[in-house]
Image (cartoon, rainbow over all chains, first blue to last red; front, side):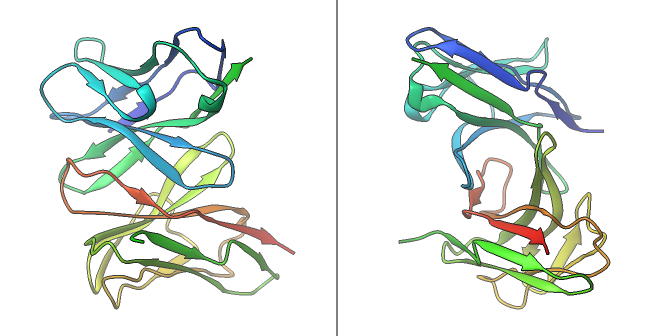
Length: 113
Length: 113
């Protein structure tokens, strides 16, 4: 079965420090991986995606993600966190053949001033 | 402005009542999706549609119904058979294809009176 895991319910980081939000996946075939962000009472917004190619993917708002095939991970990173980055972050995988997107349970990021 | 519009923003359901959530998109996307969001459970797929007059059940379709009579519209009905309907409902759309990101509406919060 294809799945996505986000092992941390919440991540706290001080403003200015680097942040990492973890994601691991299980898929058959090539993984198509995405990160989305959700602010309170809003829909999700796309941050970045990995389809193929360079393992380091750059996205919106200074975020990037590192694809690691051997560890089946796709961790979201940012070199210097901002208080405004505080939100709920979702990792997702697209399942080819059924055109379904499977989401992780989400990680709440709290950046402390 | 192109995008996805969900209405209403808040909805209350009485016991035994069916309610319909609206989702309209003007992005000319073929695929549309309905997700349910509960705290700590991430997004779970209810129904999805890749083409007009066709749709497939997602992981939690019981107690819900949809229609796709027009490309731009994908309404979701929460029937009285759904015993625990209180949740945040998100509609999304995308171009068909594994590289394509989802565009989300701003959601409908459904509560039971």
